[in-house]
Amino acid sequence: MALVKLYGMTMSWNVTRCVAALEEAGVEYDVVPIDFGAGEHKTPDHLARNPFGQMPVLQDGDFYVWESRAICKYTCRKNKPELLKEGNLKESTMVDVWLEVEAHQYTAALEPIILECLVRPMFRRATDQKTVEDNLVKLKKVLEVYEARLTKCKYLAGDFLSLADLNHVSATACLAATPYASLFDAYPHVKAWWSGLMARPSVQMITALKKPYFQNSV
Amino acid sequence: MALVKLYGMTMSWNVTRCVAALEEAGVEYDVVPIDFGAGEHKTPDHLARNPFGQMPVLQDGDFYVWESRAICKYTCRKNKPELLKEGNLKESTMVDVWLEVEAHQYTAALEPIILECLVRPMFRRATDQKTVEDNLVKLKKVLEVYEARLTKCKYLAGDFLSLADLNHVSATACLAATPYASLFDAYPHVKAWWSGLMARPSVQMITALKKPYFQNSV
Image (tube, rainbow over all chains, first blue to last red; front, side):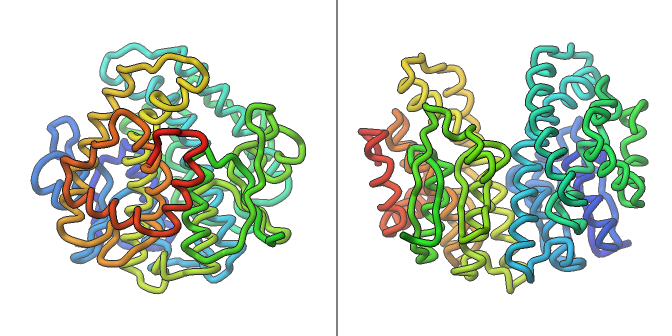
């Protein structure tokens, strides 16, 4: 059994966000399923791992880390620091900028679309098309900025792969199972960036983990 | 004129989040007002600083940084790295965890309350009390976790002040101008942590910057 454990359900894009970092950093780890439906995330055992009772949690020996993006940073800092560029003030700052953009611009618009199109139907709840449309408008505006950025450099933070790119993979992999799978077609540089990421074994691992949940996915 | 410029309106808690970091890091800077009402954030000049057309933006010589939390990290990394503890794997990870908690748990619940109670009335729009109540429930759950955490250590990431604490200051300073100014009274360790922060000159600077906008504030 690996020393590093990732607690969570791999249906969750917050959990598979960490899988991308762990795979890219070459870490040996086990995924420990947490049964969300049975409320296992709110048991004393899991609350001892994360006082907010959420997933994912990473356990590395006796050290517990939660919040998916903090887990990804820890994983890189310990095992593959070049994905953060922390030794270089300007490059590390550009990584930080695009990590924040992922969370507060890109995923903030994409997540409600995935929730409405994929997660609510799983629970036999209707998709709120107004929410989908509103967030598609936001996401397209974000993609315009990405298109301009990726015209100037190969990856988001510069001409180097970084955690800023990898943190996009998990939610983006879900987009393919929605009716908006061809969204990137209008943004050729974004599409090329995504195709490049899709060729990576770490991203293929996420695709495999999503398949049981999202049949039409990726 | 200082080499470092912070573009934005100091009414915005995203802008004053950066002020806390700049003040704590001892950086000499000028605030360059951007007239949100006149759409100055969407002009070509400002879009050249931040392609998303948002505030704040930090200019340091010819280097531009946007996304408030990336600006704060840059400011600390360059001028006061001990606020990030990046030399220490476990401590820096705890700073990251609580930086994420600030963004995705604490401010995610507090921001809608400030928007409804302070910002909407400025534009003669009614407060949506249901949104306020829903987010108060969320915020109280977050504060229960904070209370337990601050019973064990003096600051959020450990027994040391870090950017994780400072990033809370800006939105929290607005809470005092809402009808929920006494919210922390039920959480004595949170209240003591906040009182300690309030005594810092950086936080007093934010209070002074908020006063013209929020008359009853802090």
